[in-house]
Length: 304
Image (tube, rainbow, N blue to C red; front, side, top):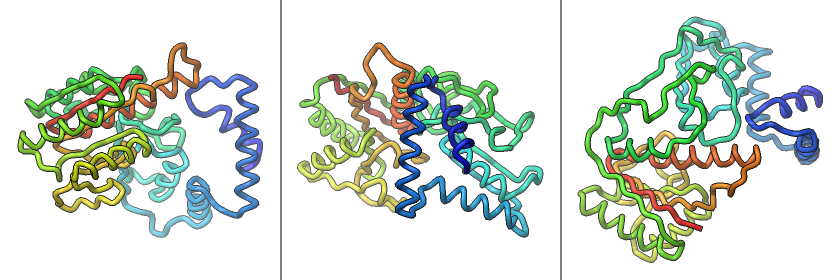
């Protein structure tokens, strides 16, 4: 990639409006990063994908894949989408891409057409929710972000609040209080979840950051509650609560979810363009944490 094309992709990408001084700062940061990376001779994740894509362009797969299925496509990069497309070529009906723009937890933005994948007249918007009970769905929908949801190629999509719930009932509780009280509230919720007959194996404690996950791991140890870190969870049935960040919970669901949310994660008003993007991303991450719950969800809002 040349410096010209790189600069164009940085300045033109994303969702924030980048003023000229900020553009120069971003470019300088990227330039320094590339200098260090090249000097030390390592590849980052995008470099690996780019190398694989270059190999496929020079030596196409023979035969091409008959079909590739991708879930959680909303959090892939354009480069990753191009790689997937290269595995199948332009064969008809060879790609099945499943995603939900409302479940996006990483920064950035694109359309499938940016990766050379045309879906006009071929996409389907799903409107029935089979994961969350009514109560869970209602709480999550009440906290939807303001980001426009599309079909991943620019056309209108369906937000959760307009979806149809297939599962009835459920429990959704909220709490707001101080930092010194939140751990005790989490302990109380774990007792209530157990009283409803939901085992530890079907319960998750989800945070937005590793720092907060570490804090609640320490609390679980004090309470002698066995836990399994989500990064080590392989789906085995074991009498342990699962704990980790929302990044590790992507694509998973649990009968019960406990989510302590620290309000300081949201930028304070007034918001710059970058802060707006950050606020939207945090709102989406909270939304994703809540929608991991099938039957029981607790949102604990820790006030500043």
